[in-house]
Picture 1: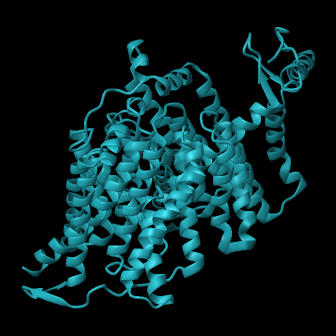
Picture 2: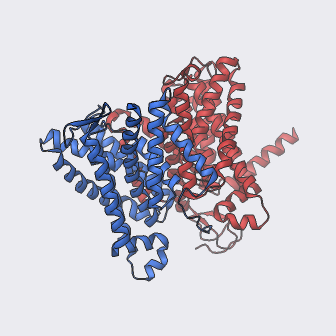
Picture 3: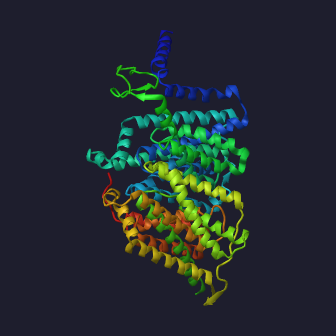
Length: 346
Length: 291
């Protein structure tokens, strides 16, 4: 009982001293709470379906950020991981009769393998060469998918896959909890020593190598990690939609994830996640003007970029928070002195 | 014997198209470091422009060609100065701005012309046959015009003052600026030339292909592959790479089973194989590690 009270008091102190003081942290906590308790408020099938898909794509966008944002290895073919994850878990489920909780991680391991296969030749390339070369891989796979209709179902894809879970609320919880968990893991990874090395590789690879760090290994690690998370999202997508089709490998899928991530702000993890939660429901909202939907989507992206070229969320964060010039701790913009070292702000 | 000739014709045509597109793409990349995903979207807009002038207004396609090149170049310059120029320092933002532009053009064309397949009559009718294979005059014309424009571009880049400015800006922006070259203006002009090339490509090739709003996707991928294969910023490389990929596509389509599905895969695999041996492409300069 005492122990419980101790933890409760600790939780309360953390909330009071670490969360309430910064609006961005309050927003993050509210976001978690909102997603976890939403089914208590509404069980509307359409609404839950949108949020489930949004969560799945949020994992996908964050995994692009982990690779391309952090290490600077621009990947234009991220749909490859998504597609391999989707097709892998679909085939395992259909022919191996492995239930979703097994087929999704195994499909993701397939995506890791594909990350290794494309990572090894791509490590020799840099910058624009890398970006343009990675674009090729999902298209190569797409050609193979079309050429082997007996295995992959050709243009129709693989259908008749097992459901993710019995009910739509369960589906929702699987997708949302996986998303929150995986994004927290990604955020932790980028916050660790490995994450610092990823940052450094983007900023100055030569200097990192000069410091005695095997950059090749870390770049491959980034490819594999990112492939794993993207593969999970692909597997979830296949089991949720109950179909793994060629649309998971298309060029537009690769472009979509780049748009989400850059729109939200790269090198943040929370940026791409937030961007998906804004753009994906927005696209659904625009379905009332079916013909103008993509046009308006493109227009919104173009306009936002004109004013916030670093992405939406870093821009917002800079508006509501200031960094202390002395101790580098973030403060709410309304404060005049730093909350830790009391140095005057700005 | 007939299919060999078919392969040669189809390889030469698609090779020339890819070469023209790739040269324009690598020009603007070299000068302004812009990866212009919308490059082939301009090609598509030009093609639709000809269709509009020819079908809806009833003029000869030749008028359409002229109008397409002028209008699309203007369109390119306008969208460059509104959407791309203000955010040029942010490479990532420029990238998705061009993707969004391409999507917007695709949607506008779908709204105006719907998604149905359309076609445009040839500039010159008729054909002659060699070894029982029909060779349309339009195919010959497309090929010759493509070569002519390539030659003109080579002269522009190598022999004129503007070409010198473009080449030096591509090599070193700061030093070019110090030598009194207005870098912003050169970038603008290069954008004009680049989009003009895309429009010209669309104009000459439209009678041979079918028109649809998604027609920019496949050339985009092949164009990027050509640029990487030949080496970024190398005219010679783009030229050679374009014909290599054009011919390999034609070979796969005519010889392999399920060739139409695999043509992209095989061409891109060739590109990756070359990159494994020469990471900087066939004629690319392996430049110093940029810091």
